[in-house]
Length: 197
Image 1: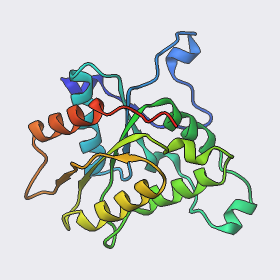
Image 2: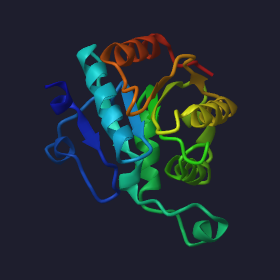
Image 3: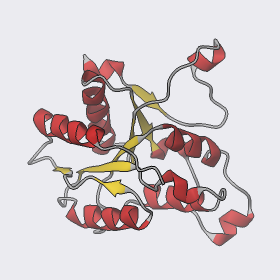
Image 4: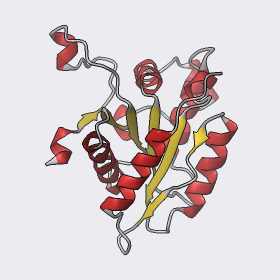
């Protein structure tokens, strides 16, 4: 089964993958599928990663909810940088393409994603390099349809300099994501090349 080939990559500062333990050099993924919730959107992320691998790409799933990052506030920043931020930055930098799978929260972006972006924005001088020219696609499983989230996320990603794929994948219980829609999303995204800025 394709999903069995997908590595669910939960980034923790104290954890090491087996290939690192045994000194095996694993190429970075071509595609990082970022799940901003651990329910249906994590399942959708796994399907997208499996399809990417089926098309011959290296793909990993990153579950943002597994990082347990605190909500970003000025007071939290003064307390020190959370351990998970640096490994998260490394994972994001390593992949040339991203898909962000996020539900709609109150007509907008889920807090797990916005807080992670806020932490990344204060952890170094190269924050914009995470997004500048990077091809990114959006997908969602949302009870409310997800359009409010997609408009907000597209605006944020464009502001940060990303190349956001025009096509997006919206799904819910009444209209689950079709395999061919996932296939087409991955195919279109992986044809895009990162901009050299």
